[in-house]
Length: 355
Image (tube, rainbow, N blue to C red; front, top):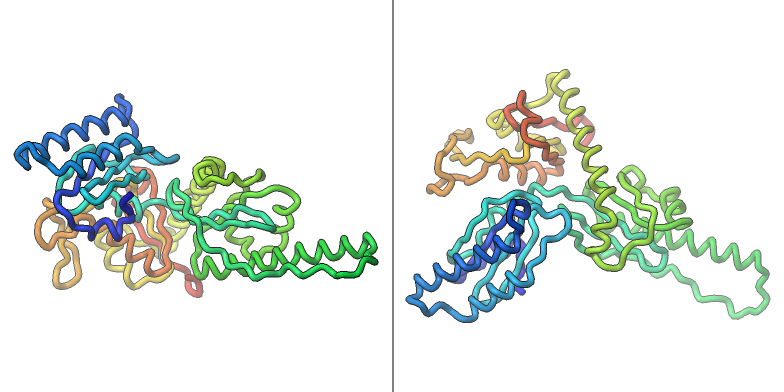
């Protein structure tokens, strides 16, 4: 399988590289539409290579189409294939259904998805084998959770009273929870994304009562964590959806307050001017707001009709998102029409003393 990490896939050059992009929703089930795109790609390859396209490419494309799955929460599916291999990925954004044959994979939708998908952390709680995962859209990625070995060797003495054993067990639990808390701090660092904790009692309550990360805990799932990533993603999905809804409501309230205080920026040009001067700002963007633009010498924007023209940034909104995230800011994607009075995009600067 080829990696479909956007940073890698965008720079992989090999002609022909085939990309199939299909929305999940629609009157016709997406697998049938994906097969239709495959047939279109095959016909284009047959025509271009005089009826003799690379058999490895056709085999890899067929393997990708047959085995592709739409992960939980995906709105679209991207399938990639070349003579070197194949891969697929679910996207949290809606794509235009199409076939692309080029010397690179069509990764714009993948990058768009990567930027605009919500980010969060999942802690699958267990004293013995805790797991930390990075949530990105509907996908979960296991992370290294550094834990110091806090297990002490048992005493060789046979003279243990039950009270002593209970105290020792409780002390060990405390050490494990402290080590877990320190491990989370080391793994997460300065990241401010929310945390969802999955676990069962009494460990769950003990952790929530002791952790120094309680301020970032925005979701709690009271059940055993599923071992597989797919099952775990489905388990946490309702809690994640509720958490993201609450964050969106809070972000819109924060914007209203900033507008009342004369602190908010509205509209693409004003937001562009202020974004790179701010650190820890909140950027609110409507879901399908995209603008192709040129950057003038004075650092202002000039709208462009053709996103593929030379010196045109195909989506300056994605560029803005990258700037905000690189400066420890926060992104909130809202439904189309929500920011009509702000020309579809708004920026709330961090309060003084906060990042």
